[in-house]
Image (cartoon, rainbow, N blue to C red; front, side, top):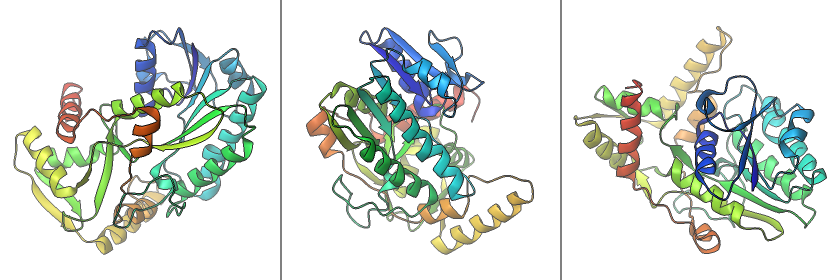
Length: 324
């Protein structure tokens, strides 16, 4: 089969490309590349130069493709319009073009953020969509556009991961970096809120299994790890892997929100938008858990990487590549 991948130069997309290249099922892997190949450098992909606004490049990537993996998205931006253009309109245009090219197998990456916080029990695919951030609202609208574009002839799978971690990840990385210095920042009391996480190879396995489902229609799946966790558990595992004692720095939600506002205001003077911003703070103080039961039943998905193994692999990679 021939695959066309958007977002292949990024964290999740590059791991997907690695697995597609290793799979005997895929004879050709095309990747949309804006400029820097990053994690794809030196790999036997077919490079399609352009971005999600380049219809000629998208058309080239989709020609005779068997599967479209749409992974590209932005996760932080200062305004709704930027999210709308990057995550919603680009996705809708890509799907319409794929339909014109008769590509019938599409896997679209969304997020738990489209649904919103879980408030005491893991959410499943029947939960209403109540996002609390601009990013989450853009993913909700994206999913709506995907369903509206459905012609009942394509097989479209929407994948909603929770927090994703693993080698090459550069945002959750800041948590591990702080722990490596002996300080473990924890929002809340350590027991609450709980979070779902998924190691990147498990997510990629779920994405590829979704591509194996070819029934016509639009299907939605949470792809998460084997359990939910609290921050005391995450701190304990991280400390053991690092081989050092980590002091928990427990931060109240009010302080998180206040600090994020300061970071955002200061960064604005330099024309930047920080990773820790008001939007992100609103998400961090809430509970984010989801159930992967539907994916297990319908896709035969089974997460294989425990929290301890995933953190061990991740930190080992950071050390080898001198990130820690």
